[in-house]
Amino acid sequence: MAYVISDECISCGSCEGECPVSAISQGDAHYEINADTCIDCGTCAGICPTSAIHEG
Image (cartoon, rainbow, N blue to C red; front, side, top):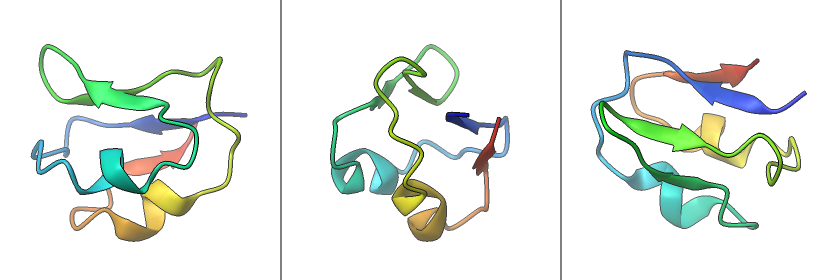
């Protein structure tokens, strides 16, 4: 199951650069994870300063 980014995201961008498959991009309200590309590695969740990323 792919990771998701909740509304706690502050759009700092730290997760985008850490994703090994480039599944994260800036969305309208905050960063978003492309579920089709996400490999469920959890790297993004570990780097998020607001704990806004979790398994979906």
